[in-house]
Amino acid sequence: MKHHMSSNIIEARMDFPAEHEKNIFGQFDEHSKLIERTLQVSLISREGQLKIIGPSSNVHRAEKCLQQLMVLSERGNEIDSQNVNYVLSLSMEEKEEAVTEIDSDCICRTINGRPVKPKTLGQKKYVDQIRDKMIVFGIGPAGTGKTYLAMACAINAFRNDEVSRIILTRPAIEAGEKLGFLPGDLQSKVDPYLRPLYDALYQIMGAEAFQKNMEKGLIEVAPLAYMRGRTLDNAFIILDEAQNTTPAQMKMFLTRIGFGSKVIVTGDATQKDLPADSKSGLDIASQVLKKVDGIAFCELTSKDVVRHPLVQKIVQAYEVYEKKNKPQQPEAGTRRRYHERYRR
Image 1 (cartoon, helix red, strand yellow):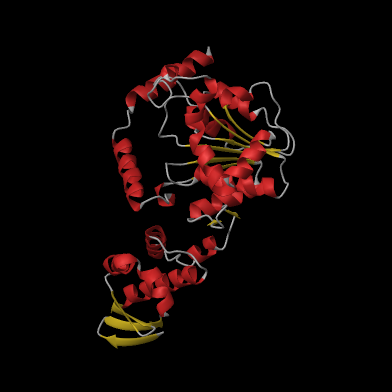
Image 2 (cartoon, rainbow, N blue to C red):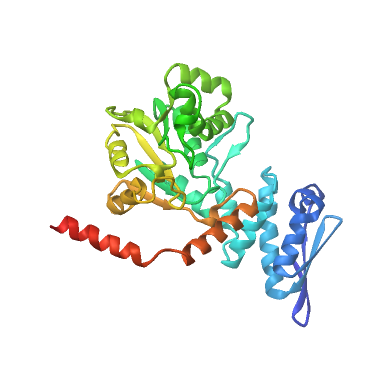
């Protein structure tokens, strides 16, 4: 890196091979414009060299961000706006290097050979906890990869013979619609709820392998009610949408777990479809099991959203709104009455 000084504005140069330029700069230079806007620098690429011009601290930051993106590009990643946004947000905390560290962790590959990797520090921690603990709660908003990463870990464990089957389950509760009005038998009524789980399986495993394992009973996708009265040994079990379980359902589910099993419970505490006056099994489990050894609680936040950047903004906007409009008083009174009733 060469630096030329002029008052506080400096110019830095770095090698910038042409074959990586389009990937790093993005279509219509959208990524480079984002870096220029965010860090208030100018980027000029010419003949395998990149000039970065701007205030000294910003230039150093831009340099580090671009080096990280270069490593990602050299590893064969297609750079998207999530990568650029995340490298920039970590640069504010001076942790840019974490991006290439996260990227080196490949959980498995999809049927098309695309690697499934954690993309944020929160996701990396979540995946590490899944490998390390018997029961992991992944709690966070939509788009943080809670279910998809859990599925990838499940399929990887299944392929490596660490477990003999995969069981995927969610409570069959409607988001404001009534199940009874849908045509068909129970299976066809329940399938729409389980669709997101099927989609992830198809993408990672391929429809053919999925179908074959499904027929052999090695992969089971079922509503939570089907778990009652069974002991689940040597299985990788994922309970999705856990915010819609009742405390009794959650306890029933967690006490089914047998030897050699691993359990991931995913949910978003802000998206409950339960009746207003009922408690969520996920909330109660978070309070009851926080200090139990062998159980990890992994909180993902809007920083871990890896869908379109707009989704991250939507999640953040809702977080701000919900904080402002949280009903304070009635809750405290309800809690007091609840404690008084159970103290008697």
